Image (cartoon, rainbow, N blue to C red):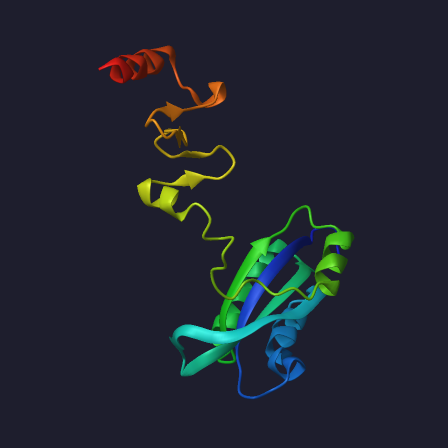
Length: 177
């Protein structure tokens, strides 16, 4: 490959007609080969029921690919994927800093993405209902801090979450009322 090539990551949604992965990925290999793309990785990511029917398919096979190609050819690759009936959807992203170690790690990984929401992803759901919740800061988008309420009904905050001096005066005044 020439020095003008860039590395890309692509997610292909392929129709499944009871075929194995190699047969299903044949159109992907054909399109990438047509434009002299160097395929670094092509692996099955997941097969699942689609949210809505696409071109008569109710199930689809997601294939993850990393490849190097001339950037001028990416639009042509996307166009060919749209013309091929066996490729239902494609998303191609440029990956500037992709290393060989990352590709190898992806090749050896067998973990699939979560199929649905698990108990960990539901953490702080009550806080999200008030506004957007940021796990790292413990604050929602409006900036109100998480507070602990003692048995006497007073709120306790750490010094880090206490806000500005005016807010502190307002809270002290409200507590005395």
